[in-house]
Image (tube, rainbow, N blue to C red; front, top):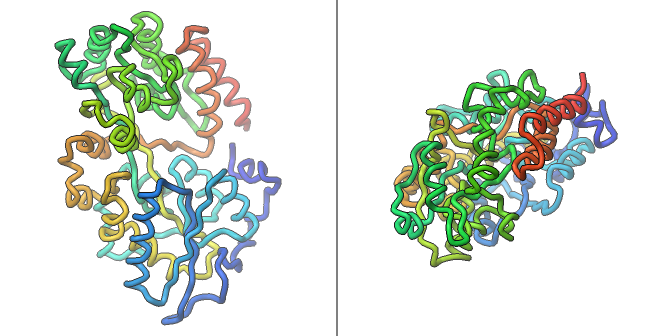
Length: 415
């Protein structure tokens, strides 16, 4: 989907052209900021759990203490976040600063509604401190449009008791994982819980050198992609050692693992507080994902703070982004481990790089594949997911399913 198609979905195709929004207020009341003036800026994002809400408030309070002339109005958009943001951007009512997921970033960058941030950056901000793959997700043609506020990678979660009883070691290669899964599948427990969707399968799909997306079009019908994914299909339908959560009456991998219906799952940082709160008696460990075809890899999911290009309060907006993605603000926000810090120095200061549960997740940040690839990834993802699940459930051969899905995706993309 091209940038104009992205806007056309909302019924408008040209409103952003020619700097139409250049005089808009960016959703904040009052006139443009001046040196020393009191100013209010709006920060918008989606909601989090109560602990995350408290941490963000703490960070915003700290920012306002250091910048007494800047007031931050925090707005939570609970439902259909990106739909709401797109509508407000088109209507000239968007906030000054807002969250942007890497998955959505390429399309939004193309429209020109985001303020380039490089000219605001000072040496003291230390861009080199960010994990490079996470930063690159918000760059295009060498220009930075957002700084990542947090992230999670994927790691292998394994049940220590089950491993001990089966007498097996934590696998370090995918071949080992497949063999270990056979030993662990017994007594109503399956070896591996799988999330059969592109956001989780992407790094495996490209492990043999194939490309899921090529020239901004679906390419997952590539023989190399199919060959790379076939072992996942075989593990469920031939080995009978892998299932998805719904196969065992669970809603997602963390729940399936907590209920001890799977000895291993591949999940993100979000699973740690969930397991602590919901299944505190499950003894588990985490490890970096076993190498796939000899390659160390994982996925990363990240969100940045971005500035509305139409904001009349850019200086204050940058100060907020600078603080929240700087060492001090990031340390407050990530201090409890609900999200991981995108700055290496903060991860080290908080000890996450040595943490028993989180070290494997932090280690993956430097080599992760970020869940983002061009403006058409949403269309590509939807078509992949629809057909990959049918192959995972044994209803269709994988090659047939993915080739049909690729054809449909590219038909929808057009041009």
